[in-house]
Structure formats: structure tokens, C-alpha cells
Image 1: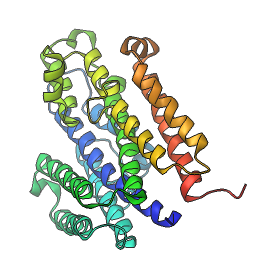
Image 2: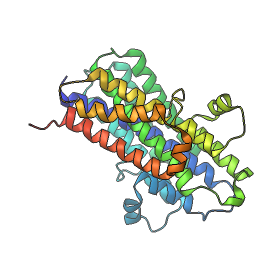
Image 3: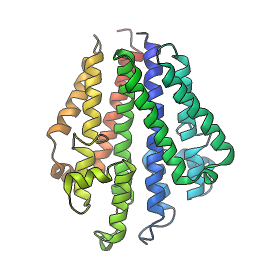
Image 4: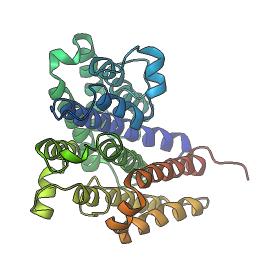
Amino acid sequence: MLSSTADHLYWMARSMERAENTARMLDVTYRMSLLKHGTLEPAQEWSAMLNISGLHYEFNERFPEVNADNVMRFMVLDEDNPSSIYNSLQSARDNARTVRGTITSEMWEALNSTWIEVKKIREKGIAAHGVSDFFEWVKERSHLFRGITYGTMLRDDAFRFIRLGTFLERADNTARILDVKYHILLPSLQDVGGAADYYQWGALLRSVSAFETYRKAYKDVITPRRVAELMILRGDMPRSLHACIEALDEQLMAINGPRSGELLRQSGLLRAELRYGRIDDIIAQGLHEYLTQFVARIYAIGDQINTTYFWPSDD
């Protein structure tokens, strides 16, 4: 396969997954901002979203105040923000158009119709569509595309690069979503165990489609320790860090290649740490510190994928 083709497939999948996960992060922030828990200034939830996404500097250059309206405008339908949902959907569609001969016609139709629809939504604004309804729509379109991909594509390297992009992006965003709660939105001591705390954790679990999964796995009240364990170490939780890295490592082993030794070493090491890790050790280290380090390692793996498969050096 040409490296340029693999590159487009990889970024097509990453862009679609990024749109979904941005919707998930905004959704949990929006739900938390509606809670009258009294421990945060009104702008803190939205500032947290920008900090964790790494977009605070870009936002401050263009908007005078951090509030719900400005952050929504910036993160959802802003043409000048490369990470907005609007631009992520456009990127997915543009990459797909470049490799139309490699993907199935059903995949192209799903992405193209999504792009046509989001342009119509942008004209009216998400308020007219409904904030929560819009986020659900983005997630549903991502689910549709992923299901069509899984159900129609030949299991060759093209399929593997798509899956590779999906799981790398999902691992990065799951870590960021979890960090929103722990790093910025962790309530004061008097709120721990209270109604606000319960609903915040419930909103967090729902943002990664894990509320029912948590109930089935633990059959108990929602606690921060168990939420962290579910989202980091449980291999049977589809959006956990463990599950994402396990799937990513399997795709890398299937693709392989003469230059992939260092890449396989990095992914295999991270997979082993998640498989044999203990939540008590992670919490003792500091969950924010652990998640920050994890995101850095995901970035390093992404960079190694680029230099291994898409922009190989001449040595």
C-alpha cells in the first residue's frame, strides 16, 4: 500500500473519532455545568475543557471571555479551529474523497451525507437543533461510519490503518475526558459522596457510554476509584485505555514491517503495563500525573507511526 493512501485512511478514521470524542467531552462539560453544586465558578467547567484539549491559547486569542456560548462556538462549528467538530467532519470527508477507490461506497456515502447535514446544521446553529441532540447526532454518525467500515471492508492493511487511527484517537480522548473530572472538576471535600458528586460521575460515565457497564461490573454506588479502574484498566470496557491500546497493538502487529521495531516496542510496553497494572498504584502515583504521562506516550506512538509508515526517514 502507498504510504499516502495509508496516511489518508488513518487520518480519516482519527478525524471521525475526534469529532465523536469532542462531542463526548463537550457533552459531559455541558451536563456538569448544569449542576448547581456550588463548588466551581461558572467558567471553570469550560476552561477545563479548553485546558484538557490543549486549546486554551488559541481560544484566548479570539474570544474575550470563557463561557458556555464562546466555548461551544469555538469547539463545535468554528471553521477556524482545526479541532472543532465541524472541521473534524470535513477532514474525515476530505481524506475519504482522496481514497475513494480504497474504501467502500457505503463508507463514502456515510461520510459525505454527514458532511452535507452538518453544513445545514451550521447555518441554523446547534441551539436550533438542540445541544444534547446535536452531540447525540455526532456520536450516532460516528457509530454508523464505524459499523459500516467493520461490516463492509476487506480485512487488509487499509482496514488495519483505519482501525489504528480509531483506537489511537480514542485512547487519547478517553484519557482527556477522565482528566477533566480529576484534574479540574474534582469537587471540594464536603461534596465528595454527595448528590452533586454522584451526578458528575454519572455524567462522566454516560459521556463514554459506560453508565450501564459500570452498574453491571460493580453493582454498587459510583466511586471515583472504580470509575478510574473501569476507564483505565478494564480490558472488557470498549473505551478503556486498556482496550484501546490492546486493539492498537494488535493492528500494529498485523501491519508490521521492517521499520516497525521501535513502534511495536512502545505499544507492547504500554499494553503490558495496562494489562498488569493496579489502580491503587496509579492513584498513589497521582491520577492526573498518570493521565498526563499516558497522553504524552500516545503522542509519541502517533509520532512514531508517522515516521514509520507515512514519512519514513532515509536511513
